Image: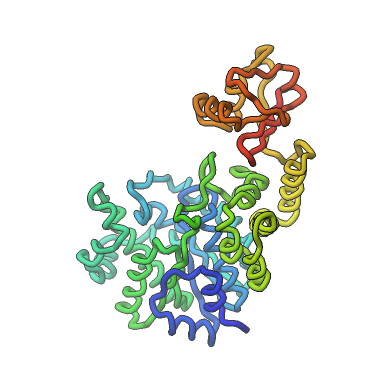
Length: 407
């Protein structure tokens, strides 16, 4: 069997390793228990987490044992990594609810059947810690001078870093120590923004247990020009279908830039590398096939094959000229609140197609808005109550379709 380290590297997933040769050798010769942490800052995972879930699946497919750690304890503090401000404090009830939501979503990618994977909550060992004992046993192992050199703290020193956030590295490091002692966990994985926290955990295990453990980070999802991926006009690209519909999720991947499609196929799907290498030779219209494959594969992983097929058929129906389809994003207006004629700009604002009427005027003036395949020329255009009862399809730009009805 091919070493999973080589698979991850070939797919462009590995960013940094603490001991590359040793990690590769370890993954090639024994079943390794590893962990990734997920702090419950919302009630859904997002596409950044999805990349980590894909890595867990690759590792599990190679016979290694994942530990998915949900941060019921660390979530009460908040990770300062990649932040320019302090996270809003959440109640214990909210954190517990979010942890339960995470468990369900993680199970869609990772097999948690007996012996295959473990899910733990660091609230089990963090929430009841004795603060003085923790400072004596764990705090004494950390140098403030070294901590302040960490990138996650450097970016916050000028704007302000709270003491509670400064403790976060100690808590995440303590997680690694607990998982090593209780489960034999030898490897921590995480996004590249977690590098400093991972190093802290490795050093703590060395100091307390006199054992060598390892760390590896993976590439953050960015476009070819370096912009962070996973944001839509409506916010984050959530995995929860109630927050982002399977169709919208599909369309996000279907609309990626030509320069990104093959790299993303490597990173967030399990499409064989020989197929992707062939796609790398494609140009022009052929690349649309690669984008459709990317969109289908990712949607299938997150929402299941049935929803992926529905999203694919909806998209093909729209772009093939078949008009609206049942799974198209839609907005229903209240008929009783409508005048005989309603401003198209008001309708677009209500459907969240535009953030403001000013933006809508600009789009219409530039020829970027159509209603039922008819391009709109005037920002003052109105839609009749009768038309809204039947339902209209608004097209914004080249690829955004939205159905609006009134009842």
